[in-house]
Structures are given as C-alpha cells and as structure tokens.
Length: 148
Image (cartoon, rainbow, N blue to C red; front, side, top):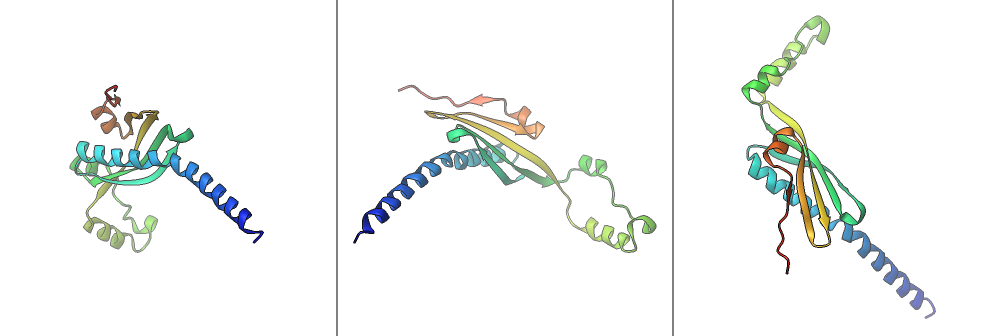
C-alpha cells in the first residue's frame, strides 16, 4: 500500500521525460521525407540511402547524410581506374577477381547531405549540401507561408 504513490510518481516522471525527448526527433523524420522527395524529383535514376541524421537544439536544425547510388555512365567508367591484374603485384587470383567484377553492373556512389531549418511555425529552409550537382540544381530556398 505504501509503495503505490512512489510507483505512480515515478511513472509520471518517466512519461514526462520521454515525451520531451521524443519532441526533438519529429523534425528528423520530416527532413528525411523532404530529402527523399527532393532526390526523387531532381535525380530520378538515383537510389538514396540515409546513413546518419543529426539534430540541433530542440530540433531547430537537422542535417541528414546519406549516399546517392546510380548506374555508372560512360564518362565515369573512363575515369575509373581498372583493377590491378598483374599477378606478381596483386596475387594469383587477381585476373579471376577482375573478370568477376567486370560481370557485375557498375554503380557510382556519391555522398549526399541536406539541411533543414525549423522555427516556431515549422520548416523555414531546406537546402542540399552535397553533391555539387544537386546544390546547383536547387538553389537555397525558403518555405513560403501565408500569415494568418
């Protein structure tokens, strides 16, 4: 009987603390969705994989990092260095490994990052930080809001 009040108090404190922590992460999900939507609009052939999400104080600034993967173009293939097939330098199985690697479709992985800024009214700015092609394609934009 004497333990009921402390148990209830501890449960109330735990619920209040966890609610405050969860409020920070609401903006990270929204910024990830914006990044996926923008990547599909700007470069439809690319596959986006999100690796890391960083959140500023109270979720006011969110940076989402990941990679964009796309099939290798002819110019990218020309620049890529071929694997070392010299048996003396690379080992006895180097020619076999090179033949197996050439049978797979080649892809190019490019690092990608976006920044979302939030204020009291919601999303205030969204901009690409990397790769350079998407930074140029989407100039720094602010979200238009109608004042009510």
